[in-house]
Amino acid sequence: MMVAKKPRVVIVGAGMAGITAAHRLHTASSGDHFDLCIVEASHRTGGRILTSEFAGDRIEMGATWIHGIRGSPIHALASDIGALAHDSCPWERMDGFPSDPITVAEGGTLIDPSLVVAPITSLYRRLMNSARAGDAPVDPKRPGVGQFLRHGLQEYRASRTGGSGDGGSRSTDWNLEELEEAVFTMHEFTERTCTSADDLEELNLAAEGEYLDYPGDHITIAQGYSRIVQYLASALPRGMIRFGRLLQRIEWRSGSDDDGGDDGCRDGGPVRLYFEGEHSAMVADHVIVTVSLGVLKAGLGKRREEGSGVAFSPALPVFKREAIERLGFGVVNKLFMEMDAAEGGGPFPFLQMAFAQEEDRRRRVAEIPRWIRKTASICPIYDSSRVLQAWFAGKEALELEALPDEEVIRSIHLTLHAFLPGVATRAAGSVDRRCNGVGAAPTYPGRISRVKRSGWGKDPLFLGSYSYVAVGSSGDDLDLMAEPLPRRGRGGEPDDRDVVSPPPALQILFAGEATHRTHYSTTHGAYLSGIREANRLLQHYRYTSAAL
Image (tube, rainbow, N blue to C red; front, side, top):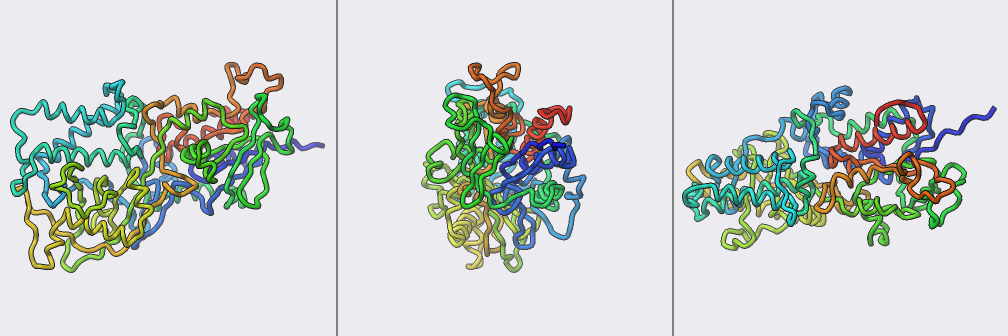
């Protein structure tokens, strides 16, 4: 009696999308339906999820937040497995996002919270809420978020009666509009880290209305984000995940005349995967590709010649290549700093930094390096923690990756001296009292002894952090990212109607945060995409009626 061969499914990547897809396929049939394998280039699971510890605190080097708790599959899973329960280790943002900032202008001017900070913050939030509600008017000549935000600030100023004033900063020569500009720019810097867009002019305004968070609080996971992936992976048979397999090339059958491949009758399936080093090639009926958009981009460009990215043979079809090229994929890094508390010093504040504009040479502190100047804040990772945190995006995030620890620490000290100038004069027994009538800028209560930072941009396994819809792309490109290959036409027919024998279906499937139209850039988007592609295969073999 012949035993039917199980379809061979190889999943590329053991991050959230890949582990979720494997978990769904394995548990849906108790392992009976598919011959499953995950190939992972690194020696750990998680991908861009990486929980670590620093100075006795639990920190997240990658994914940090559950973006809304009502309806979120990540929150439901974390709750079910007890990952939200507090253990013995304090964790990043265990008390939520800080709500009591002090905002200081470069040079040590404490900015009036009621006259400047609150109105500008409220304006910025209204503008972004409008963008995300889909209500923002789009300028066809400059369709980016940056233009919309700047126009909103101009209208705000034009609607105000009276002079520019001094912004309440009586002991300095900052005027109201200059302080407003600095605070508004500070919020734009935060937006860069939220979206990963280096330049907000390149962030598609029209697409902001499609992005969705789940309702409810945004929270972090007490036992770490890695706990979620570890739980899902624990249900998989030992040996299913093969570590240290760096994929270099995928051969598949497109059905076109210029395939350059064989007739698809390979032993084991129509897809073949080749890896770096001495690892044997693999064959499969189906491959679920979950590598980052950065790796896919590298596979299309010059970096492929340098050994980065994944090559496809035959090349990916035009619709897929163009979607990969149009979508944005940025770099966001986190810097953690351990603070040595000074004797008698209080806790470090939630410091919002309003930098002087580039052309304002008079107020700019020359010692502050360029790579820090687009950082919005430095704050403890929870109230009273000795671990401070700052976020970096774009070119500044990449520069941070390249610097030695000693230079990072020196630069942070120079920046803190410029914004909390009490540290510079404390040794002489005095405190800088440049204030605005609401109190002096606080003194810095200690020094930075060591740092730990992420490095997603130059890591060849990721080449960035998360995706965004760039100007020139749209949500349609995210849908195109999710389309399997070979592409099927209407009625399930292949696009190439001249093909006598259609190529096998669903050879290459795509999952990951950059394949979800409304939840891109998030872990729950990656999770949902893994479920989607697993369900696609289950339905293909009529193993389930689950909705895609």
